[in-house]
Image (cartoon, rainbow over all chains, first blue to last red; front, side, top):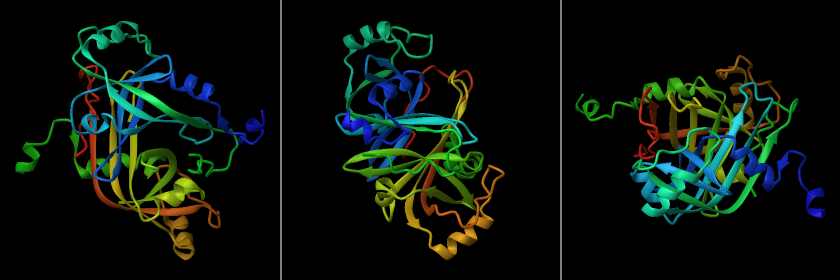
Length: 151
Length: 151
């Protein structure tokens, strides 16, 4: 595809992004609060390509509802030679109690543990608007994490 | 201090936050772009309590200049039993060429490698408005990562 030719060599396709996200159990939710892009780690699992977040009630949880948020997941080796980062942009909606019980029994995350039914966590679904990602290539420049890949 | 009594048991003091941040070499910069809280990994080093980011030019880099940003650093064990997360809120300013050369020779990050003088990376300083952090306590609830600690 012509679009593929223009893709940087280290850009990940949407399919690659979702596959990598599914390997993790903790991601970082971005929510704008008081003009700041607040970032907090959250547990999550995948329901197909829908990210299901498990969050307690609070400032960030309330601010996330029906707001444009981001969800970032990465795996970066400390010597900065390998790794990847994926950014999902989307909208968060609260999961109702009935739906929550069903999700708890069917959600399969990368962790082997399903969420216990009846756990009183707030579940939220992240409805994706877009996903992008970049892989850190071996032998890349020390400052290869040029933060310019968001588009 | 009375304030200390009201602190949650898992909240980190500012001093603890900065000490933990200094143990890492990659953090995540949060910048609001098109209404979304964009999150990208960036290399960084500490110059006392000033976070110095090393970023290439691009969309995120431009959006960060003179904007309210956040910088998040964490270390989370996959079994979710141990870990911590720190969030710095602040303002980013570009480091001038002269200042950049000096910083490159004096900045000591947790990595043993100083930045090579003459490297053409864009350096930015994050002037902190505030820092907060939370530690994940062993044996805590499975969903202890309640994303409500931002204040």
